[in-house]
Image (cartoon, rainbow, N blue to C red):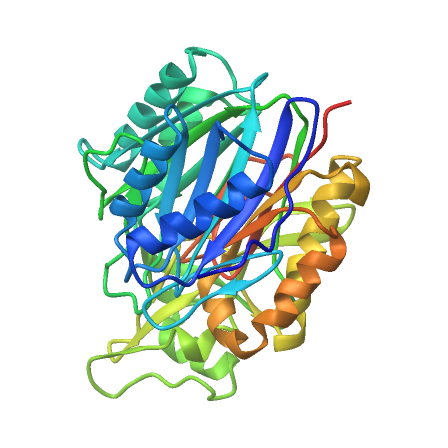
Length: 414
């Protein structure tokens, strides 16, 4: 059984706690996490974020939590191999779960999960409206919207969500993940009826404390760049008039090669060499949204984990394992700075850290955890390992990216 390694942090009516378990059954996981949360001083969480290894039955865990805490709003999604808190890496073969609980009698929260019936954009609109209805705040603009969709149509889904909540809401999230890209990801809410393997969960948060977010990567641009001259959705056919796969092979110095037949999955081989597009400018410095190459094909095309468009310029980005390790702390530092919060003014952290980056530094995850914990000592935190990350660069629109880190920092009541 996991030990209660987190202490609830709160002031007045706002309290937070994290919990984790490496239990091998839904019952054991639920028992472990409930015990940790309640020993921290939270008797009735109002909002819980749950991330779990896909080998565990997400729905069963969620139902047990909802029975223990009637009325809780539950935002649940699978996470690559497990999860992480400020205290532990919850990741063993076939197990691993983490959660973040908020008790906030002065705040209001609403959550809705469902499938992509009617298309991803319509699903985004439908779930955003249902979440607002669930919070009792229909038609209002929430300070924060949390989204977790299954991979494949994140851009369209986000368009639907934003059409309901408007451009004034912070939208942050991470795509549900499994352990081997075989489609075993799932999302769930507190409704107890079913989980969704093709769908999304949306939560609207009206907390009684301030929130601040940051969306960054640990990569730098190289000298290699070219304009997309032919593409379709997430498939790039040509860059600067040349076959995209051949161009990428040349840019990487042959580290990744175009196959002679069929297509090759290059996700692991390209984790330190993604493609970037300028998404915003900070002074004269470009800020990039990243795309992770998924496959290279003998026909010269390549597929990405984001949609791109003809006329956009792609830049080969470069990263190192060292920057991926330190990025967790760096993004939290940025979120604190943006929200004018110092370490003592933070009550909780929720982070989405790319699953591809995690797999690249899986043997150094304790160092990643320390990078986060040292930035906000003693603060309950939860990290989900996702197959896509969503957030805003500066004050721009919400974007879907890969190999990035998206973080939410909750303040304290005055």
